[in-house]
Length: 465
Image (tube, rainbow, N blue to C red; front, side):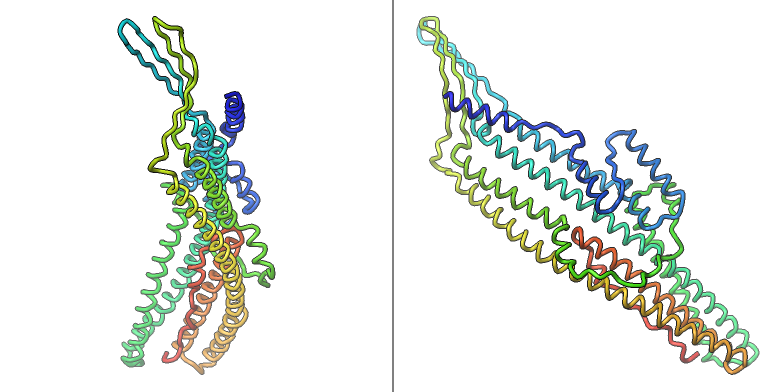
């Protein structure tokens, strides 16, 4: 009995756990500061919410660049704030696992002839008490998993916001160029109408200009639709509400393309050491290993109770002692629970291997997309767009020398505008691929979108005009 009490004392001391000062938010903040160089706040009071809104108002006073957009999303996205409360839930489970089980009281009154016997007992769930250290370690690992999961969600939101910002700015650029095409088409259609009225234009030539005008109007409508959709998606990620959304201003153009793409020959090694999803899968397998050990230890002592007994009678001395009650494992030896825990553990090991394989593949794919997107965008900016510019200059000289007509000049202008629009798409695809690469070094990237990099159309066909 003394040895049992000594063991229980150690279990009590080892199982005690209290709430942390930051609720587990500190490591998440550190991750955001280390990987993103961004500020992260958890709004748990009205004062903290007011401070966040003041910071949001400051950010909205000027056009948002990509980094400011990420900062604003990390402060103001309500879904992320909801995820922070997962930390509080996990910590509560961890602390609860370290609490002592409540004791139970029993009282019985027995009558035998003139003898009146009172039976009083104090019982404690011994199985839960014995498992206290293991349960505490298990919940501690789950708490660590929650921190990893929330940190990864922070990084994912940052990457998603950065990509949404790139798409919103590119969509605005595309809308402006669609407007320029529309203006050129309007001028051509009006000129064709006037020349047809004086008999200098046949019906086929006028129909071609009208057809281009109709296509340009359709293109402008689609560009405006894309611009609205991309802007609203960014607004949702930023968590802007009401008047805040109307104050959202973006730059007029995407950042310039870097002269050279980054060389990352050891990207797989670096990524595997830094990726939070790989670390999270490893933590999950370790937690399940602990759970498997706990199931093996407690499978036969699932319902084990220790109690103190005191019986008093009006015709006999008082009886004192202790009692131990145990559920007889006649029908359930606990094999099912152990088998379930073993299967979960083996499943987790396979998940770890799958996560590692996918991570290395995603790193290679993201790096390849990044390099290809840079080469394509650079080809547009250094080859196609300057070539179209030279062609436009030569056509202008021929128009001034009356060697070509106004419609040839307008057609060439449209082709030049189309080449610039394709260059904008290629520049957007590069920055999207860069965002995917950055995310692939920290967690699972959204490569589905990067894999569907827009095949930029060829410059508008000027023939026939």
